[in-house]
Image 1 (cartoon, rainbow, N blue to C red):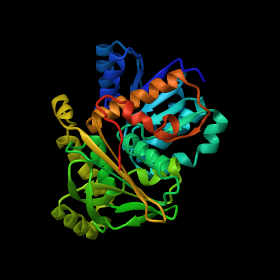
Image 2: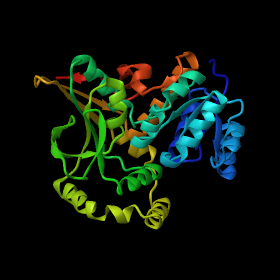
Image 3: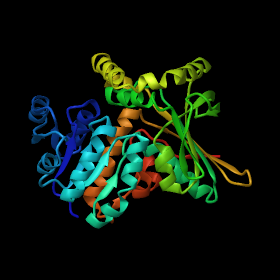
Amino acid sequence: MTIQSWMIYGANGYTGELIARQAVAQGLRPMLAGRSAGKLQALATELGLDYRAFGLGQPDTVKAGLAGIDLVMHCAGPFSATSAPMVEGCLAVGAHYLDITGEVAVFEHIHRLTARAREANVVLCPGVGFDVIPTDCVAAKLKQLLPDAEYLSLGFQSPTGPSPGTSKTLLEGLSKGSIERRDGRLVNVPMGSKHRDIDFGRGPRTAMSIPWGDVSTAYYTTGIANIDAWIPLPKSAIYGAKVMNLGKSIFGLAFVQNFLKGQIDLRVKGPDLATRTAQPTYVWGEARNAAGITRTVRIRTNNVYSLTVDGALAVVTWLLNNQPTGGSYTPAMLMGPELVESLPGSGTFQVS
């Protein structure tokens, strides 16, 4: 498929707007889209771009909104609610689908659509932001270094606070606990039940396992059957996570979720440029085989939101210039582990 026209859906959101502005700075001309015509019109006028306003509630509406579009960069979360209708729309009109999700359930759903994507000759590649480009590339690099690895751990250290969309995703996760992969299957793990010391690149830190998207994506990238994901947290926070397990059922109630998401809209703002520039991220991965041989890979990258913008546009640009076979991909499956090293602000893999 030769791409003639592409769209950023959710362009009026925090990350969608960052991607739109950087796309124009790179000489790209995306169509802007989302549900709010007023917000889209103001941004489109400023950037000199066309826009379309449509919701995702009805399949025919989505298909009409995607008419003439060859690729969608989907940035409207929470993706647990928005991804499936957009993917169906892309499959219906023959448009490639990219998003910036980090949600395990979304990755798993899209992987199950591999056969349909091949038949439609459509690329489905979720997670083309910080979730999960750097960790996915580290996983692919570790698979190269230790092909018979049976255990894989991935993680990152970043001081950046979450955007409104990411905050809502994390809120949904409070009702479910953590997730890891064991013997090829996803299993639920009580939040805070697993902790260890990890050197992400700035010295050893106490860390806790989290339900990060790599427990899904890294499995398809590497075939490694046992995967967990980690972030550094003080022991007090890990203890707090254990206590919160007692309230999982409460956090899962619809009215509680709706109230807290409303508070997020009022109180949470994404980091500004100065904050993003001053806060790099450290990514770590460890693989181990049955004989106990371990390999470790670390890499320093740009701030999580800056990397999301650059990573998303790197995948868009690659698809503008290449015609891969349709199917479901992870970022490293599509472009190789070197993708993260090629992004602005990234170092090179440090192997031990």
